[in-house]
Length: 280
Length: 313
Image (cartoon, each protein chain N blue to C red):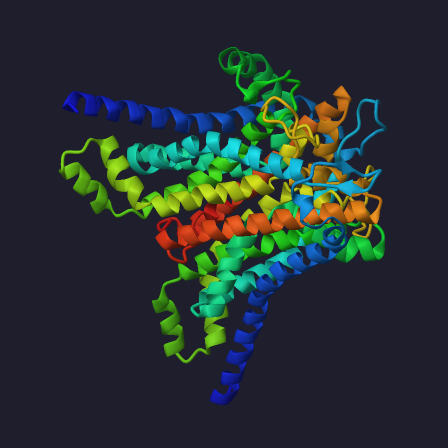
């Protein structure tokens, strides 16, 4: 091959790589643009404060879904965060052996588990025995989704803590558990919080595991033993329904949900930057 | 300060508590497997292995076969990879090899954001934006060029294998891109430098020195994307058409395993029906766990033990 052709190939391939990369970015911008364009006009005070009106009528809001999302995700975080962070601490502090390897591997594999399957677990343990759908079952399913993710991010963050810090504490006569909690975990706190926020952002948008656990509810409720609406379930019902009014509300709900997820994700980045600005 | 002995004990308690948390993860995988298996037992006993290759799905006659969903799951995921892999690898190559420094962070961030969009939002976007776009601008030229192949037979009504595959492709790009990028970052600079010093052009250095070095990890990244695509539920349910049919044509409605569970579980009133859906769930779980395990092993060979791709989660 002549040098000219080789350099031409290089140029063409470079250009192709650039074009394809920007196609991926373009997809994101398109989706976000559509959300704003079609959803923003429907967002007003009533949207946040009113519950849905009967099908076919116009007006109404998604207050029930916003409250439900907060309750279900909050409860899931209450269950999932201690377990996930604890498992992550184990991996970072004692995870060198065979059990550590196994747990790490399983966490990675569980991270890719279809969320709908986890919904079945929530259904089997809570909905089936109690014979009614409940927000609690949804929270349990979401917590299960969170745990492997938190375990891995916590481990990663704790590992960033310099070993010399740990050695200094031990040399001063600190017990190992105290070193781990007071020195290591506290130093990595920003990173751990980031991991938790990213986990919460991810489960906030989950729909599949809630379909037959939290089910959805047209009325405002805060009772976790009852079916409860979330923004994601609301979007599913409204987007696949026949009414234009529903589609309008679906776009607006999607914009709100996306905004919520983005705010949490950006907050997560901000927390990391406070701590690890120079490292990461 | 406690005595040395007492401190020894508290250390042991601390370790035991953490180990307890860690053991929850292996238990979880066993619990999920157990739940699915016992729920699926009636269907397993009743239909045997033929569940995998028969296509009847008749809740009235209580006869169930999952072949169309298995086919649809594999077909939509393959289509997704076909579209997503070139895009995702380009993003990874661009970010590690070609991009000016100031552009790296923004592009990486924007692609990662694709992973933050909830599945149901993708589904809605698919219904209202992607499908009309495919109908007006993609399907007519495709049909004009390749209409004679079996893959483009029939009329395009919207909800179809094509729509499902394209949505899935956009959804898995961030995962494949993030892992591939970390794999390429792990390739030593000396690999590139050696190739460039030998007179290779920039593309030749990438193709002959960088990509082969990271090959196992890149394949792992693609398989990881496959695992995601296989189990993706909401977006696919909303655009794939949900019909128990096997058709080679991309323009026809199809079904996936995850979509079937999402769609039919609440209306599964008989025990057999429910059990059949549980067996679908069991198949899906075993399939994704296997695929993910293979992917992880391949990725770990490149970046041992590191939580590669965790940023894309």
